[in-house]
Image 1 (cartoon, rainbow, N blue to C red):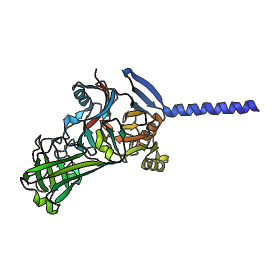
Image 2: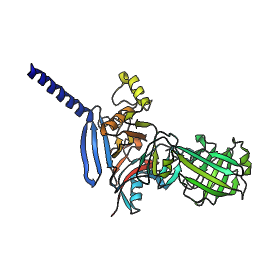
Image 3: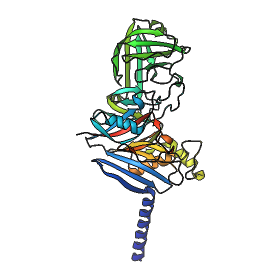
Image 4: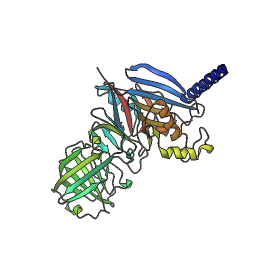
Length: 401
């Protein structure tokens, strides 16, 4: 009897191991000598047909760093991930070893706004765009602290006795902000419409703009023509014609005031590099409840590899950033290629990130944008059959001796 009981226990244990092995999929080590503290591998997910590429960066390695980059070095510009990585390496102080595509935004021309990001981007301490999906933001401070707490911007321009709130930085006028600040990082001009508001050209502002900023300015010029040029030593304040604040009339050439920008919680003001996505995947080791509810509601109708009009349920190429107390994860899942890799739903992506060990994660841009670069080479198979020009990128860099 005891023998039979022990046999049943052993059999159950073996079945458990088999189930875990199937859920975990197969890891194939790539580039074993890439860099100390950096692990890159291909992950063949066995539950469905999907191939992922994963980079794991040890957080306590002082020679490895998290960075971001803008396409074409400005908001109104797009560039391939590989080109951005090469340009960063050419600076000489660090070398990009792994790079993936970044966040969401305007990929088409959209009346001259092709390249505009829809969430936070902080690069080398410069605040380039503000947070919008405040839950789906990730930043690294000067001291190397990882942040993924909800972040918000508070910005204003003071003129005379009035203070005017600023809603956006380097965004499309059509995105709903009544007051937008444009810096030289946007591009050569604002691309605004003359019939929708006025523009105030501000001079005397020390640039670049930072997350914790409070500086005086002088009004250089007022324009009602739209599409004002942005010089390297100025900024442009666009004010919607819908604003009826009495302070607007005080913006006259020669007038002075103060521009103030800050992020909260306050630790975000110390961020060196930050990226924003769309939708938080993991928080405190748990999958976003919205994804869980959607998955459970549609579980019986789930068809592996099927694309869907509802993007949360559709099997698509995906890019994600995750981390835990010890490790940063960059993940790209290939998709839209049935005989090779069909892609993942967002719930599946979050589940795999938990399998890999992540406790926090955000969803970055996917589809044809999903790109995984190692040592200047694209190693995944983008669904568009070629590397796409994207808005921004995420890097793991290493110090150059």
